[in-house]
Amino acid sequence: MRNVFGVDVGGSGIKGAPVDLERGDLAQERHKVLTPQPATPDAVAGRVAEVVSHFGWSGPVGITFPGVITANTVRTAANVAKKWVGVDAARLLGDRLGGLPVTVVNDADAAGVAEMRFGAGKGRKGTVILLTFGTGIGSAVFNDGHLVPNTELGHLELHGHEAEKHASTKVKEDEDLSWSHWARRVHKYLAHVEMLFSPELFIIGGGVSRKADKFLPLIEGIKGAKGLKGVDGTGGFDSIASIKAEIVPAQLQNNAGIVGAAMVAAGR
Ligand code: BGC
Image (tube, rainbow, N blue to C red; front, side):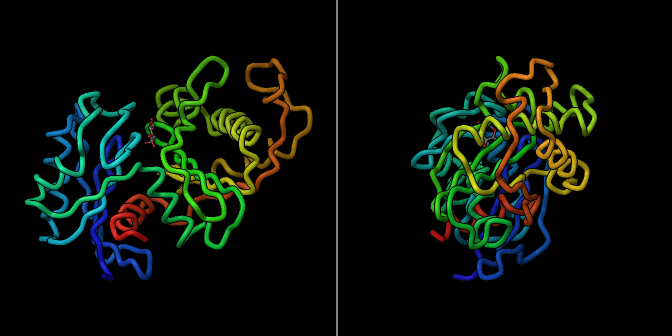
């Protein structure tokens, strides 16, 4: 099978396209609709069906979800309607798609799978962590190319907050943070994750990866600085820690979720 359909369900948009699994790229230009608010199971399923039928697709479909997924069932829903918890998403979405075979996977895991095969993580051994910055913070952890599914590193606690409530790009927008202020928060978060996992490589994904030139040099600058005091001014362990891991932007950028969802659906 060369093409499988991929859908990425995000906090603001739902986008999808047939994916060419050999090239790891979209086979046709993607179609995007707005995520319904509130993002209830029925409303989201309706929009996913709109995206898939736009292409007249009949075949397997991989769909990302911004929460923990085990056995195609939603276990957490931090940034979408809580009604999702406990829903067999593959069954719900498959029914709405007229019985097409559906596989559901965590959004960051899907993006990670695509980046490891076709993007910034290609051929990389050891521990690689992809972090997506968007409405929340998603994580995908790999060791020697093998995924440990459903890690939820966006919910680590940092200075008494959940990390994603402090350093997501939504927070950057809501609090109108400058790139340098946000980069300091992200640096502190990466230092904390490094302390726990000692990865060789961080891949920064999510919509913000398109703007890597705006913040990666800032993070690299902080990374190199010794004895830096954190934004909270405490100069505590994680605010002075320097990061040893390489930090690179995701290469598939906004299409990583679509490509990865299709790959997972195809069992790749
Ligand atoms: C969710 C994760 C998800 C991330 C990015 C977090 O709030 O708990 O499962 O990967 O947001 O959407």
